[in-house]
Image (tube, rainbow, N blue to C red; front, top):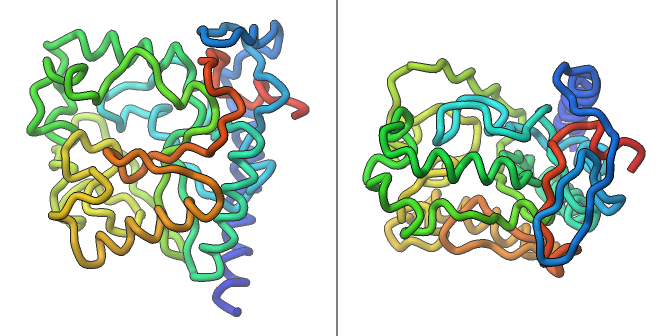
Length: 280
C-alpha cells in the first residue's frame, strides 16, 4: 500500500499541473456556437454537447501523451483541431476509464492516453496527407514496410474515424512510478516502430511489441509473433478495459471503443480544448 499511496500522490500532482497548464494554454478556441448535432452526419461548431467531458475532471490520475498536438506522429506535424493536450470523451467512456485506472493503480500501473475524441477536421488532415505521396518524412518509424499508396486500401487511413464519435480512445499502460518520455526532436534519426523496445522511440509504456500508431501487422492485438511479456502486456490492457465495457479493435492493440456508444452515428468537429467542454 505504500507504493500505491506514493503513486497516487505523484499522479495527482501531475494531473493538477496538467489542469493548470492546459487551462491557461494559448491557442484555445472560443466557446461560442453549438455542436450542431445531426445523426449520421458530420457536425461543425466550437462547443461539445453536454455528454462530453474532459477526462482529467473524471479521472485525474490518467497520464496524457497527446501525440497529435505534437510533430511526433505518422505525419510529422501538429494535426488540425488539436488546440490543447487534453483527452475529451463521452461521459460513460470517461467514467469507465476511471474504473479501469483504479484497477491498474492497485497493481502498480497507470493508463496513459495518446488520443481520445478526434475532430473531423483532424481526420480530413490525415486524408490530405495520405494523398500526398511525396511526404514520407515519418515513414522510417511509423510505416517502414507499407507503401504509402496503400494506406487507404490497407485500412490505415479512412475518411471517417470512430474517434470523432467520442467513445473511442487510444491508450497504453505505464509502470509506476512513471518515467518521463523524452521529447521528440524533429529531424532526429527514426527507428522502426516494431524494433525492440530498447531501440525504438523511448516511450514510457510497458513493452507492447510495437510503438503507438505502428502501421504494421505486428500491431494486431493477437498477432501470433508477439509472445511472452509483450503478449501478456497486451492482454492486461485488453482484459482490464473489457471488464469496464471497452471493445478492442483487433488490428490495433491500443484502440478501444466503449459500448454502447452515446453517439453511434455522429461525427463531431469541435476542437480539442478546455473551452469546448467548459462547465460539463
